[in-house]
Image (tube, rainbow, N blue to C red; front, top):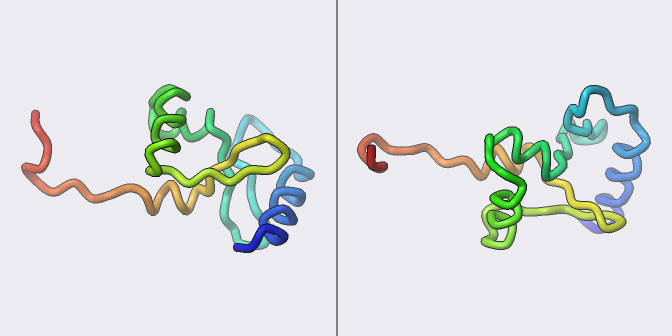
Length: 89
């Protein structure tokens, strides 16, 4: 997605009404933009963890006007299947 398209998408999303802190819907691609708080709530982790994951390249932030957003589709694509026996416990 080029910079102009992204800014257009953010503008449309930001002007849409938001209810009950739901992810911001994108009407052009049916993707949703999530705030760092929403990502933290989704994964049940702290905002600091979301920030660390971003710095480590695990999450790809999008920004506009000093604000950060994450595409829900990219969040879902970042999840990996855990193989049986691949974790301790």
